[in-house]
Length: 293
Image (cartoon, rainbow, N blue to C red):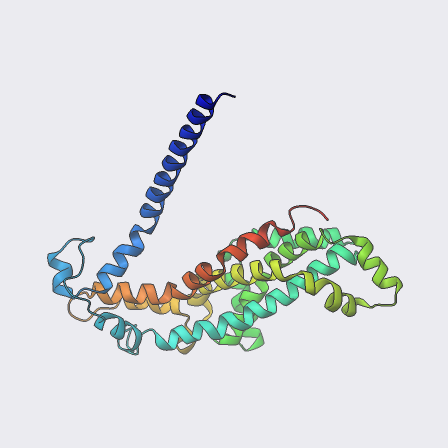
């Protein structure tokens, strides 16, 4: 190829690269526009919101709406802000994520390397569980929680999320463990290693990518859940999503949009931080088992 042709090709590549970056920047701006509006609105006072436009910058930074959203906004008859419900969500998310991840790892390990009669049917049944709509299980789950005596409790909500999430976590781990050579497990069994020894010494050390994927997935699904929270929680055990809905629909006097926006950002902040800090590990984990061996 001549030097002229090379220069033309190089110039075309630069133009295409710039066009790609401009397109991506435009799409990112559109995608982030609601968050930008929420953030700008939360930093304005009520009068400035009413007299300005959505994208206008605040005349001065006012964090009073954030303070009120955290510990003073009314969510129904109580005016304690989002703080207690924020911590309620953590009380639900942490054990539910830990238990469903552990159960998914064990299930995936059994289905992929300790096959038993009917294991494929068991896995198919779990796959069906991934596609059952939330609304279908509301009444049976409510009856079960009442029978167990844990209705309207944090423990009940943890159980609901574990039961519904274990199908997804099993699917993730099973697909990942399929890429681990069967000969490795067979060799360990010949050396006398048992079920849990192989799991602890061989399987878990290589499971970091899929554990990260599962934790991020489960954390996001459970934290953002509203239906289970509103259906199975009591007044003192409501997660932050239910409290946010109550706050937005409760008003005394004028509507305080700045408080509503600040509360919405507070409710979304943990999942935003998870994806910002661990997003690259999520992508790596999803592709870690893509190539067998």
